[in-house]
Image: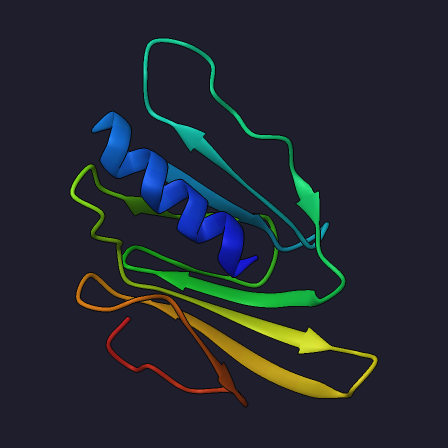
Length: 114
């Protein structure tokens, strides 16, 4: 998943276009779309993990689709995705902010200001 986010970042910078990165909390899948005149949706990838909550600057979701944007300069919106690994019975927090790389943190981290 991190590899796909980094791929989307590289595309945003090299093509100088914004990208929306989506997570489907119901289907545990993710994909990205390049904002342009042409259709540029990348096929959804189904994860081995359960996505059980997502937060961005505008909303918090427990189901449905949630996204964050990657700007042409590579900066990302604030975004949090809570992930459950049922095989290992572990929770993780995927965290994005404009000032650093995407991070995956072991455990459920609460970010009150998002």
